[in-house]
Length: 95
Image (cartoon, rainbow, N blue to C red; front, side, top):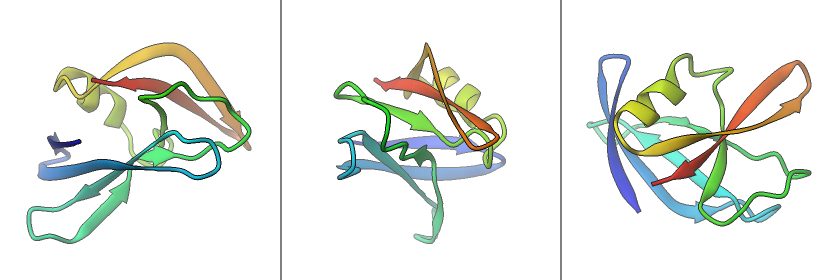
């Protein structure tokens, strides 16, 4: 699955066709309109069990990324969060 995301003044193409081997959660990679890697938006938390079609979001390194994903109809925020180190990562369902 692919989608377009407008974030921080950029138009990004999202590649959501891969899975983390540790737990099967969706990998979301963002690519700029010039074809350059921008960021991996998802965060692999291998100790967490993740349902098919869900992933944790790296909101620590990408401020407001969850709001952008939700407002643009790409993801739905759940009530689950996971903690790793000093950071808390929200779980989303990919739409």
